[in-house]
Length: 99
Ligand SMILES: [Zn+2]
Ligand SMILES: [Zn+2]
Image (cartoon, rainbow, N blue to C red):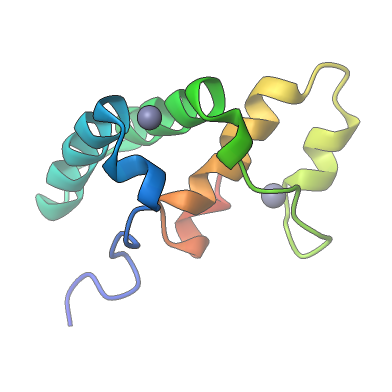
């Protein structure tokens, strides 16, 4: 099947009740459905979650994540690290951990 493994996961409950999340997710889903580049849309959703829903950002990943150990070593990792972990909430795992 085309697109297998690239399908977006079902959004978390808090995303259904937030207009900001919902609008950004719709924009992202449209790009994915059109098989278009959605880099900016991914960043926008992750940034929104990290800023507006910091309590929903997942805990740092373990050693199986290629990026968390690197982010942990940065002097000021908080924002970008949170955005990286927020990607788990709305992207397939293989895509989420690319950034
Ligand atoms: Zn939101
Ligand atoms: Zn990670």
